[in-house]
Image (tube, rainbow over all chains, first blue to last red; front, side):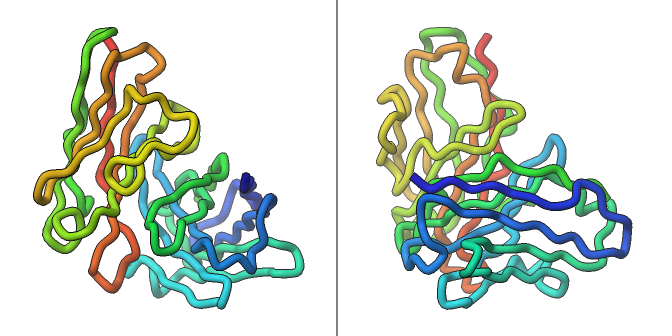
Amino acid sequence: QVQLQESGPGLVKPSQTLSLTCTVSGDSINSDTYYWSWIRQPAGKGLEWIGRIYSSGRTKYNPSLKSRVAISLDKAKNQFSLTLSSVTAADTAIYFCATYVAHDDYFDYWGQGTLVTV
Amino acid sequence: QSALTQPPSVSGSPGQSVTISCIGTSSDIGTYNRVSWYQQPPGTAPKLIIYQVTNRPSGVPDRFSGSKSGNTASLTISGLQAEDEAAYYCTSYTSNSAFDVVFGGGTKLTVL
């Protein structure tokens, strides 16, 4: 069973960079089973896919965020991270990390989520 | 605006059945059997309840069932219980190369 835990600052100033980390337990970041993913949810609204990274380091991002977002792996710590630059109030949301099962196409494990306020 | 269209809200009384629709296109639901559904009670993370249109993960009650016809997927919850009150989201694989997955806007289920 995979467990995911988000961590990072809960408050970010406008124009600065949001940085979050997802710590993975129960599986290795090197696993080729998953795309390691980030999803966010503004208060009272729906889910928005931010992007994902594969164990090879290959990434894909939501086109609406692509110019500001980066996802990376830290294999030594079994973590993956999200950075979002030039944030505005519109980036205020709960940020979730999740595992997306490659080739079967569903999210099977989710972190509890972390609120980031800009 | 979400890529998949869901009704904003549905409701039902305990013991009844409700169905939530998720309308896509031939680039996603219409072509691929890669539809999944998630349940999100208030203040919690989404939880997978249906994957690949009809499959239930271990531990999900068989009151939850999924189906698909053409470009529309559906989630049916039978024998409604108070604990089913939550938001429900559909997703689908898409052939749009810019994305891996597209989401529905979510449906709030109220158990009367």
